[in-house]
Image (cartoon, rainbow, N blue to C red; front, side):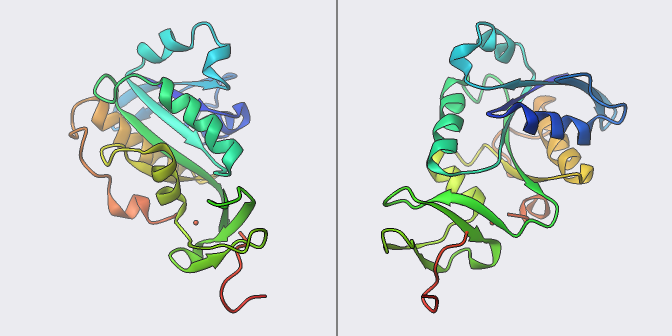
Length: 209
């Protein structure tokens, strides 16, 4: 089984391979085993328009991972360019991996009104926040909620949080994708709730000046 990891930044893909491949990756490729199934992983980074073999490599994959980290306006635009280039979900299973650092308690988005980059704390998700720049208030989304809205992801595409340096989180997410690719899990099935529990600037709250 071949899984292509699509990402804006090559370094993110290398970090994921380091967590997933026990023998260590070789450049931007690596091998692992999930539930007894050998899986070859390949990282395809950057703007798909700048790679002549991007489409052919994606089309030949058994599964696809869209690996993301920051969700500010500029980052989301680059992520959207990759997502829009993908084949139909029915053609090949896709999962989104949100990569975070161990112990990270916040994540980056942009103000929906003025585009100001903001840090949102996990503990402030679903609260009413205010942009320090334009002073507009809005409800703070979780990282996965924000990404889903920005890309208009259907419910059938699962979003997982994977923690860099914590292979168990990455392997659990990859196992779900591999099972879907092998037909063991229906494409529209929702991922295990426990896998999705980890999710996440500093946005001003009502009691902050």
